[in-house]
Amino acid sequence: REGTVRAAHPWSASTSPAGMGEVTDKNGKVVVRKQSRPIGEFGGNFGCFFWILFIPTAIYYFYGCMVLHQGRLAVPDGKFWYDLYYTLPEGIAIRPTWKATVAIVVWVVFQAAMEIFIPAKICEGVTLKNGNKLKYPMNGLAAFGLSHLVPYALCFFGLLDPYFIWSNMGALLTVGVILAKLMALWLYIDFGLLWWRHVDDPEFEEDWGVFHLSECINDYFLGVCRNPRLFHRWLEVPFDLKRFWNARPGLTLWVVANQSYIAAMYFGCHLTADGQAQCAATGDWSRVSYGACVVAFAHWYYIFDY
Image (cartoon, rainbow, N blue to C red; front, side):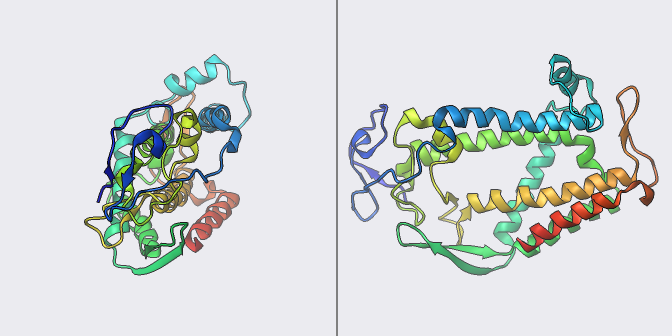
């Protein structure tokens, strides 16, 4: 499946065909690439570096305002960040935990298994630059339903606290950030620097991969390919990473997290005066606001319709 490289691969400032040697596909045709991706969006390297740091920092800040200051804006001084990372109880603090790590890994594997194994109608996507149309399994509605049924069943049988996300949100945020950074790095290396390994994939296009190492931060943030896929040899429809990460683990978790937070309201979950997480043994719907239900339903319907 991998393309053939007919010359050595000198690691230079450029990873264009001229810099890497002649690359051919399985039919012996020389692969010609052309940089037709937008360059300089979001401010180029400097702008992308800013957004890489700013986005998780902003999320941490507003999360800290909620758990430390009851939603009031606060000055993000040293004490703010110290309390957010160290003082808050495990799970609610933004320091990563093994529990949060296992939870995210299980959730992602669960979503991937549904994407791959739930029987589905196969539909074609839009025409790519190379003239191909990729196939997609349309089993999102079934996966969306199971994504609710399984957590609800675990809660019913006492294997999972319904307010699990509330009580572990800080750690889940950090583990999610780490996973996203590692995933972006892997994509940059595998589909960017080692683009020639994918020239025989039907989704490979002229502007795939890294063209210049000087654009590394820009490429890391914006991506080096549009439809990276895995398991071509084993699956009738290869596993599409872009669609998966866009639609399955994140958007579905969004609505499930909303419901976990409503459960936290129902059980009166709060931080005590000494900073410990506490939830009542029994629930009370009077604790749940009408606004929270409306927002949760609006989010739920948006993803259901997605």
